[in-house]
Image (cartoon, rainbow, N blue to C red):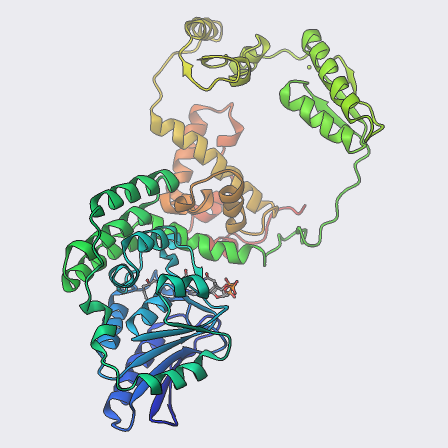
Length: 528
Ligand code: 3H9
């Protein structure tokens, strides 16, 4: 943070830490030094705080989180600013997010450009606004809006922030110039009413129900996430405790979150999301450079609900489809359904679908046998369970299935055994993770981050677990390898459980973090 003396008895503290003026230790120390200089210089009457390069500040330096505990020391600086004996005015351009907004809340006045955005997005990183944000914001704008902004993490534009009372002035010109003018106007005004720490949270008669509704809302909206609920607890402390105890509670809750696996996972996701679009796999194929392969015809196996839809999709796109269905009854139904759909689309397209009969395959797997007897799961009302109705979701055990399974076991000379939840979870997850390592080993994916982001965006993998590859590192690669080896020995007919060479190579190094995997494992074995 740079310190500059301006005309008219003013000083400027300008945060300069490209690209977003994040609050590194050096920046925080720079702010403190600037404040001390301005305090000891009796010619200085007021201070303006701003950020370089058209941004105020995007908050704590997220990349340093694994090295230190953020927030705790910066909160002290926010208090020092509030108690400062000379007016401090924040001049906001671009963003004031997280610790950036907390810095501005510490200031006695906040002036922003109309295009600026302010917010406390910490929950998205698995933490809470731990530099007084949960204690100051409700004192400024009340509990209901603070709950909304802090638990959702959504930033607001300058106009909305002005209406809410977060900002004092919104302008279309240079906020620093405006802040300089403004500082001269408020020099004689008392500072005490501007010190949020000495105010109390505006009280409401129904505070208890506001909080219980907020807990219920976040449990529904963000199931499994720790940070939104913990932020509500911090806001409760702002209401129930005096400031000096409230900030202790905020610190305690912030530390609890920061140490949680969720914070580590969500911070990994923050950087993974911004890095994936810059990476391409060793094959050099990427969505930016790849061109689609020409498709001359398509084969579809099975004309159930999905097969029909897929066949229709291609037929509508003008691509000839050959569909194969072994069940004559199913084929008849499909033919009728496809024909009538095509007739409806006839004005738009000329292609027609064809269906031929043939899968004389013999099946031995129990899952295939269930399908052969028409048990396709929820859509047919029975599968591994029986459902309340076709397409129904309420399942119950089916006595037919127990009978079927005991016959199956007898035929194949299988011993029944109970399988723990842990084994089910591990076999599902570790075989999926194993496939991820194979994909990396073959150079199909550019990085573990790419695999993780696909799982988060496309498969509903919980964000707070970071994705399957991050999860593998959380569990420990040697553990994943050992478990896969154990399950593969027990189930040699399941190739997905055979540990990949890539995993073996990495586990030989202990448990390296995902960012080091590629350099440790060496170049991929084959290219696309
Ligand atoms: C916090 O403040 C805790 C406090 O309560 C308590 C303690 C004080 N740190 O997204 P972009 C990097 S928690 C480090 O491409 P845009 C980003 O990785 C923090 N690095 O630009 C990227 O690097 P690279 C709460 C950061 O214009 C580059 O900056 N704050 C940080 O599309 C450009 O970013 C947040 O959660 C950071 N805080 O969007 C804000 N922020 O070029 C998170 C960004 O190497 N940040 N980087 O890939 C954002 O929402 C967006 O980055 C922002 C700019 C809107 C600022």
